[in-house]
Image 1 (cartoon, rainbow, N blue to C red):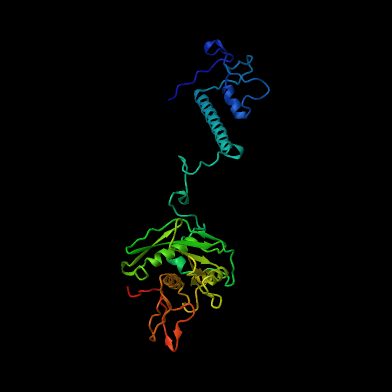
Image 2 (image 1 turned 135 degrees about the vertical axis):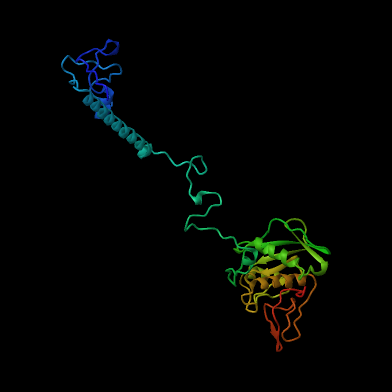
Length: 329
């Protein structure tokens, strides 16, 4: 059984001699009415001033009722304080008091899977597609068959060491300005093609090294149809009739017609990769001293020195396209 609460006499002094007001403390009442001590008078930070005798809250009679009143008052004050604190926390998170999201990778940040290094990209986000060498070489590229460039060239930077044995040829790759073609891809194709065992490096007889400075043995040049024609004419060759390439033997340049490089030929159809290999091998073959020849039996592979851009069939003989000097290797 709970002990009876001792009733305080109205106006009786509290500890320290100060008279204590009956009922809840002043700061609790301020929290309850929302004034927060900012009302008409200054907030009392010391003991509450006792009211005049007889003006206080009447003492509760009966021990059980006194405890009940105290419990209810405490619960009410606790509830009000919780609401006030929650409101302050909410205010600190909203509006002008909101904190910015931590930078990616900072401690305590809850990141989405797409934020993680190597994590999946968000749905619908564009992703860069990197094409392989074979994929690039298998595509055609737009270029006007009548294009005449400025006649100014840029050497493809860098170098590629000769990978084989035999006589070493040093060459440079130049690309005419304004073509809109991938010069690095062209240079890679030349190096790969010439040093293939089916090409002029066959049997270790030769090896080819690309340079971008110094004295080359020849310069493989990717140029517009107009510029190709101008350089081929220096060696008495006319490339305008069939828009073809040439080895301008009177100069240092082996001319590859950019229109053919970009678009291919009817004789090869959609086999553009093989056609580009044939272009390189055919024109460099001229630089190495090889002349034109054609296949002699129906159904044979055309020799790489056949003019395959112009024709595959001749004199009732059907020749099959072939980009290599030594295709059986």
